[in-house]
Length: 151
Image (cartoon, rainbow, N blue to C red; front, side, top):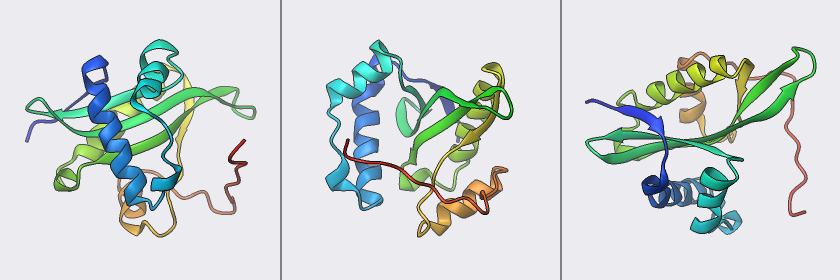
């Protein structure tokens, strides 16, 4: 199976939107899914505040990753590539699609002089956690994530 991971363009926005909706439902966060397709398009294509990759097989988008590089590490003095969302269609999860996406993210992080790639994974999602270890990540022991939501 030949998978190509590329930067998303205008024609991919509807498919990315659909995959994000599926991700929100999968994570039991459907009620938090507030973005509309126009705002997503604006963030990716106009503002460029969010970058999007798509994994494509035979013209079909089978996965996506949304990330940004605006964060920094004060200790390392370099940027951080922050992975905001990654989602692969269920039928393609065992077909190296995730590995291809992470290979592309590593390349992008190096090109942008980032010191690391970071993201969150819900603790109940053991399968994803196991996959993330396969691609070379480690869980940040001793750290607890916090956020202020609904501002």
